[in-house]
Length: 83
Image (cartoon, rainbow, N blue to C red):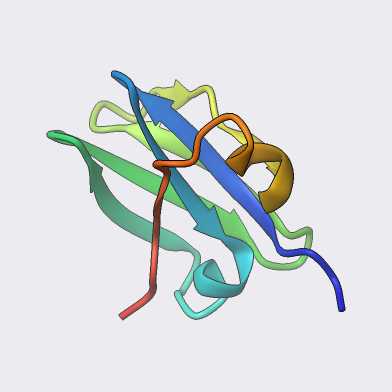
């Protein structure tokens, strides 16, 4: 069993994780809201990587980590689920 990899973001004190398994269910771009801020997650399915941008298209400082490492510091993290 492998530990899931996620792209994660903290914005204005709120954290959200975007599991690659959920991002893979989408076409490559996910529009979401973190707090009151719209964000766009752009996923490269071939390289299992993702970048997160604000409403103006500016990159936001996200990280890619294993869940257990992230959760230790951000236990209140929201988790993105594809519809």
